[in-house]
Amino acid sequence: MKYAAMPTKKEFKKQFGVGRIRRSLPEGSMHRISKLLEMHDASMLARCNNGRLSLLYDIQMHCDHALRHPHLSGIAGKQERIDSVKALMHSARGELCQRMKKRHFSDAKAIMARRFGISAKNHHEDNLNAIKYMNANERKDYLLHFFNGHVCMTDSSEDNDESILYDTDYEAHRGGGQNQLEHGGAPFVLSRNLRLYIAGGDMLLKTGKDFKHTSFMAGRDVLAAGTLRCEQGKLKWISAKSGHYQPTSRHMLTLLEFLRAKHINLQKVKFYRVFTRPLDDRSAPGQGEFDECNAMDFLNRRGFPGANPHSMFIDPPAA
Image (cartoon, rainbow, N blue to C red; front, side, top):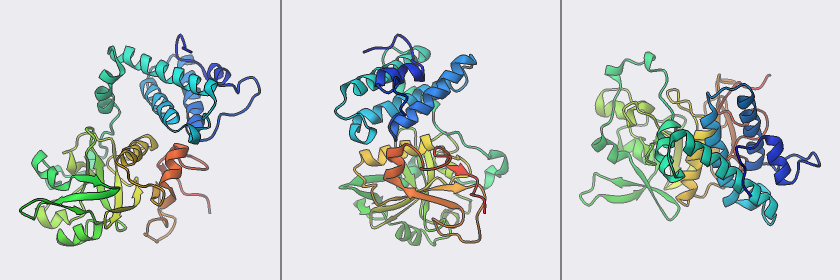
């Protein structure tokens, strides 16, 4: 099965096998694809090219997820559904290649990583002379790696550069204090070349300068940003809290896909989005300014359950 061009939502649902009986697509990836196709249809009707590349990128990403996890996506054992999703993915990738003037989709991946990274915001609020910016050599000390489902870091204080289990509290204590931790978590970024950097130590004491999310990559674009907590190599929770990068659900999905590819068990990991203003004076994760769900649920649903499932920064519910 092939589409001559990007199908409309109606055309895709017909090929998927639910168009004639007015049923919705399954929850998770397929439900998200349905919403994205609606947005793509609207952009085509309005002849608006702004944002269409990101829509195509999201559509092919969710199609790829659905095909790799057919049971979670409601397409397992149903060849008609599998074929329709494959055709949609190839159609989206084909149009992306055409727009980027690349012959193969693999050639466009690096371009897309750069184009769909998050640009830093709020630079105008910073006194740049007071912000610590890392160079490539400095970043090496803050690079995480993974072994047997554990989060690890190289202990550069040892002569043999021993690999140790990453522990947020231990790294903060070793760095001179815990002033840098937010709610018990340390700031991280996922770079465009898929390197995960974290700083749990007190960088202010080390450098005399403020340390921000932009410090890791010297203000350049990243794929994801926020805070996370590890205890003895076990990932406990992740939040999207980053005032400079303000990640969306797409960026945090990229992070979770990256962690799952590294064999990190996300089943017991808590995942937080951030309210635009606190509910009260409580500051622990899951209270006050945070809205909680399970990381695996977020990944499978391709967004948060309930209202505003795709936004990582939301208004708090009415009292």
